Image: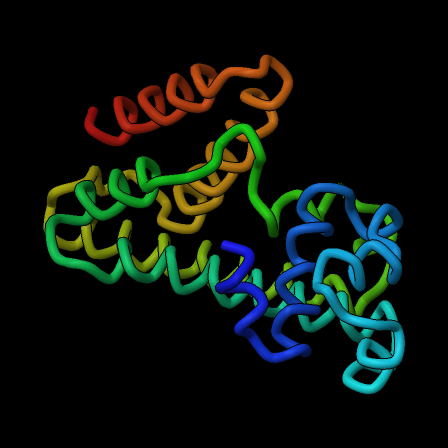
Length: 191
């Protein structure tokens, strides 16, 4: 792992280190010194590539948002029925006890208070919600899902189940509440 990280360019190492630290510690807990240590980069290198902590954090948040969007699209845009794609999204491999690297940023007061840092978070969550709504609409149109379902409401519910499931899992130190929430939502959709 370390050799793979060290083979990255310095800006890539800085971005990846910042992503991990934001996920673990949040914005306030992610100091430039911690980033430099984790990336194996000096202070001069960091400030050569990025204007400062906010600039680097923005690059890291954008990268996390891009990855979240791509992972969601990989399952939601795949083959199968609408229900099967929603199920695949809900059951895809996740580090449930660590939580969502993007969703956790919504609980960070520094990120939420800064429109520039918040923008990629808001954009990707909106895009994922929109994509889920499209899949639900496909299911409604094909008769697979109940015509009484509002696609936008179901999309918000799916996203809330995932993000809330992370919170419940972290609170208990077990992925069981996350899995229970997913099963409950899938049972409601199948009805």
